[in-house]
Image 1 (cartoon, rainbow, N blue to C red):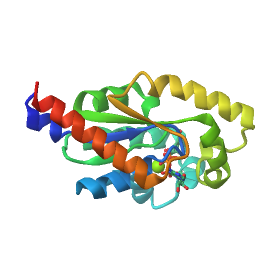
Image 2 (image 1 turned 135 degrees about the horizontal axis):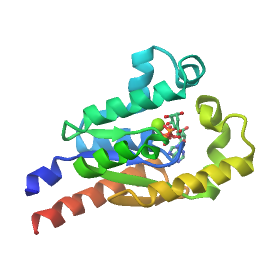
Image 3 (image 1 turned 45 degrees about the vertical axis):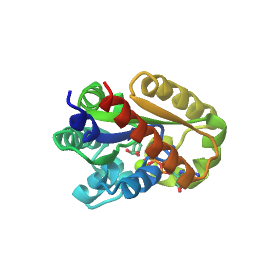
Amino acid sequence: MSNSAWREKNIVFIGFMGAGKTTIGKLVAKKLDRDFIDIDEEIEKEYKMPIPQIFAEIGEKAFRAKEKEFIQHLCDYKLKIISVGGGAFLQEEIRNVCLSSCIVFYLDIVWDAWKNRLSSIVDSRPVLQGKSMEEIEELFYKRQEIYKNNFHSKIEISNQDMDELAECIVENLKLSWELHETK
Ligand SMILES: Nc1ncnc2c1ncn2[C@@H]1O[C@H](COP(=O)(O)OP(=O)(O)OP(=O)(O)O)[C@@H](O)[C@H]1O
Ligand SMILES: O=C(O)C1=C[C@@H](O)[C@@H](O)[C@H](O)C1
Ligand SMILES: [Mg+2]
């Protein structure tokens, strides 16, 4: 792959619900002056309803199919910053298309930091609803197995400030672009 091709790849943020993909993705896009796309927001626009309502009225299966369709479509583009939903990487076809055509950046939040975010995100995340803390922790570590085996770059998240995290990610990306240029 040519140097410019690597530098122009889309950047895709993955990680568990509430890790900060949407928040951090937006900040990174601003710092790099690139377009930002949040797949959950695109699906909400398409159905003109929030995710909990999509799950309740149309169903998770249709949501997952739309998630795959939108991500596959975006992978034909370049220079985009894309935050996918926390469940997107459960689909093998999504993992494959992102890993082969984009730089996949894993936001690896630690459980102790994540559990403090639960109360602020649970109302908008149907997958978390009706589960005990033990069940959520189990899901957290089960999903972690998928994320940790399918990324190009990662950053561990505990309680850093959002802007500090976005800055670290931009530095990491710039370094990876430079490394590819010297190859
Ligand atoms: N570094 C951070 N420090 C403190 N709070 C944060 C940080 N990053 C994100 N948050 C907060 O955590 C919540 C979840 O963040 P966000 O919506 O970005 O997660 P997400 O990874 O996109 O989740 P999902 O997979 O469900 O889309 C938001 O309320 C956000 O303000
Ligand atoms: O982790 C998940 O399964 C999900 C995460 C959110 O981003 C949304 O995509 C939706 O709530 C499902
Ligand atoms: Mg999000």
